Image 1 (cartoon, one colour):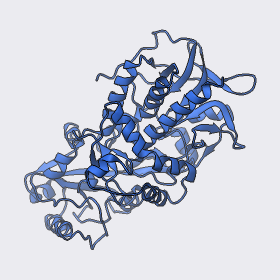
Image 2 (cartoon, rainbow, N blue to C red; image 1 turned 90 degrees about the vertical axis):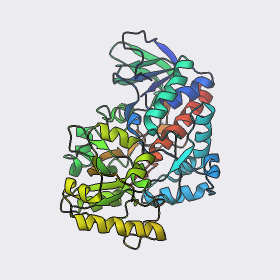
Image 3 (spheres, rainbow, N blue to C red; image 1 turned 135 degrees about the vertical axis):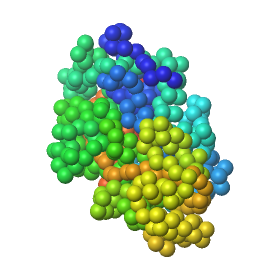
Image 4 (cartoon, rainbow, N blue to C red; image 1 turned 120 degrees about the vertical axis):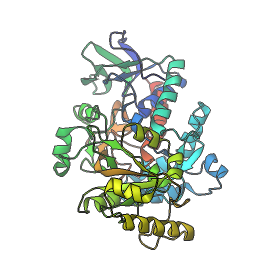
Length: 458
């Protein structure tokens, strides 16, 4: 589907039931759920195209206790998903948010399927012990797949999506309740406002304020990820939390003008990381923080993802990476080593050891236990040069599990909701790959349901 929506010169009415700021997966899901429950929402997007950072997501959507898992022979308890996410987040996750998240993933997968958006293939990401990362059978990158299909439903429901309109300020009534948004053109009023504006990885001022040690890092985010929702909410008294918890993604190709995130599914399907000599140096599917720190500790402060044609077939995003000129291809390992300037013998020995580990299902070097379904022995071979970059901001607005935005005293700011990366607390100090898309659908639905239920009392 073409990335088009209404332009700002199209009429924006003065009154709606619900204003959703942001058009990524969280905002689209929220608007759909609210509309199906009887509300009339509008989606305002400051960028000229819809989709936000969601369009860049590539790996999948984590969920537990799903029908899809059962079809793949995977039986588990959602509490295991909770515990692994809790551990992966340094046990700094908000327990109530995390419990709602982990226990509602299967419902979110079912909700998507009920809308004709089927995620029936599985892979795995770092920090997870089981295959929980759901993706389409076509193996298409999850972000664009979801955004484009959600937009189809948005159009069917005739929900207006207006691009090029920035929310300049939240409007409040005499009681302090949020009742609308000020834009450059007019004030727009509603029973409630939803902030689905994403994080602040592309905000030089907020990164410098909360993580000055990262101010020179590049980011995988689109230019609009500047923390606007956080700033809007703070102006009406909202509390922020864990703002210094910024995730650096370990595998980002940065040799071009644009930084390209290389999705975790590449490692989840079997790729290994090698240093400047061609040797492995880390469990590739440890948490992002651990893998990023290991790469930064290398002399080169960068590494190579190495994989074969089997992995490439399992990760369709590699086709996109190739089109962008990010992938080195060779018919033999010797040729690959020459092209990326690592030692031939070391690279050959590395893959020999790895293939033995896969065969024995035991990685004696680094203790990797997942992403070991297939050997790396089918030519051609591939390599992608990567280094860490700012990817995700775990901190943000303080919300409760019903997605109300809270003030500094822990009280609900009436009329104001938030979902997605603009919120803090769910992920702790490290987001698990595949959990961000889950968050957008799970809490996007929750906002739509809460807004619809509470609007009946207004």
